[in-house]
Length: 153
Ligand SMILES: [Zn+2]
Image 1 (cartoon, protein in one colour):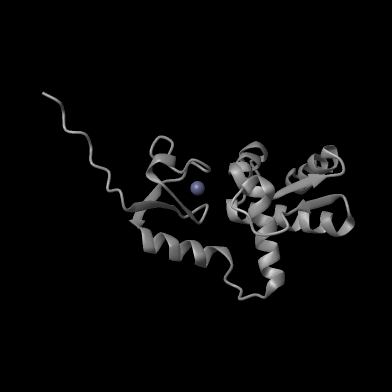
Image 2 (cartoon, protein in one colour):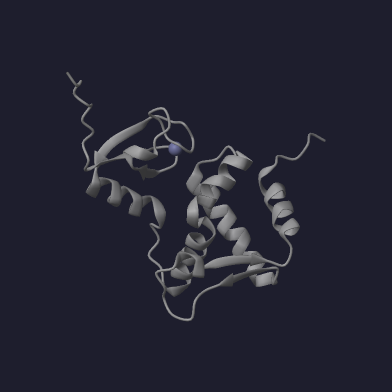
């Protein structure tokens, strides 16, 4: 006789207080947050969405804020944000990490060594949105400078 399979409520999400974002059940690693390994709490879809909204941009903003969000969505797409986070292990919550890298990239774009490539009209193809660097080494060096503690004097 087949054992009953454990029932996972399909309409709930798992909220990580540390990362301040929700995950699907399938995202979990060993029952914990896949990014920071903290315990997660189960919550309904609407709660998860509302919490996500509150965690993201509490500041009401104009087009400049939306532009910044687009920058953030572009560099973090395809799970890249989490991959950088895991590689750098910056010791700050994921959302703060995202904000700091987004700031870095916005400064880089202003200075000219970072370019954001967007399609001429909104596209369903995520790969049409991308970030390019004059030199990858520059980006790596800036990231390391941002997240590596200064050696003791
Ligand atoms: Zn987490």
